[in-house]
Image (cartoon, rainbow, N blue to C red; front, side):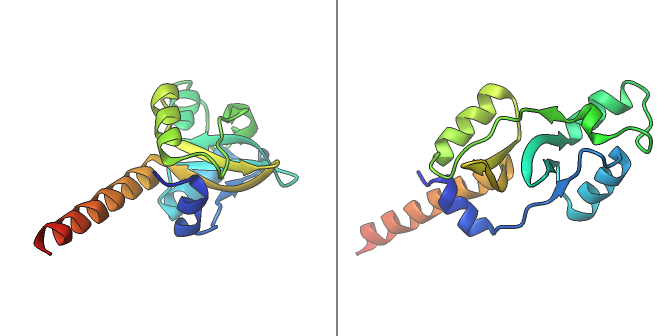
Amino acid sequence: MGTVKHLLQKKGGIIHSVSPNSSVYDALEVLESKNLGALVVVEDGRLIGIFTERDYARKVVLKGRSSKETFIRDIMTDRPIFVTPDNTVEDCMQIMTDKYIRHLPVVDNGRLLGILSIGDLVRYVIEEKNFIIENLEHYIVS
């Protein structure tokens, strides 16, 4: 199974983030325009939280709050679970399953390197399985 480092190299280094002082409405506009389910919350260049669609649904909509008047810092998940480049794809899948989360920031020595979604992991696993199947078919035919 591949490592997070390998997956990030393949995915690219684009990190969409939001400030803790941003309004929830502004963050939702970023989620919508980039077709994302989560944004990392960054302050002074370091990861301090994560904002997800689930945070919005549970902490804004269900509580009757206003998206334009609520700040990310008030509803973000602080101290998010993260992985390092050395973790495996299997590690990430296990963490996501155990913690009921869909996004994992990647941090190395305090530096945010990226974020992985469950979709990224599933895509990787499918590609890996297809590669193995193609090699086995080639082996059998040869």
